[in-house]
Length: 117
Image (cartoon, rainbow, N blue to C red; front, side, top):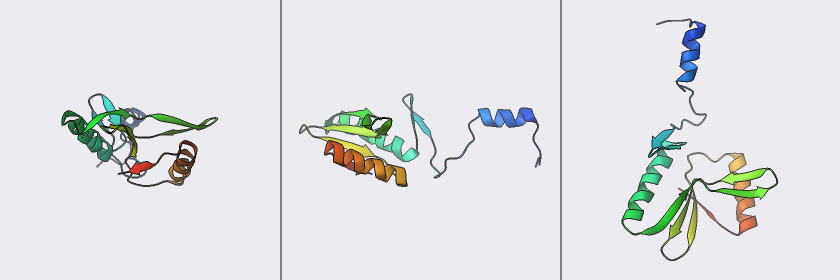
């Protein structure tokens, strides 16, 4: 096993994107979309199947909500249900303090609930 890398080897390593996620999530690419985790990608596949089965009217990937000047919240999905309601979905493995604060602001400002899966 090699103990030292040359500058070229290190640069090649960085190019490959071998950086690990802080929380162990593995970025996953499906249909040209890159998801922050395999769990999020799996939920996307579930939504695709639900849409084909007619269980939902549609969905949107990574909608952005403006909470205040220079403060945004990006959900993972919005699901448009057949009954005309919508669900804001956040696929969570770990709840950060920043997420908890933004969730509260969004729910208070827009009178909506975020569903965590």
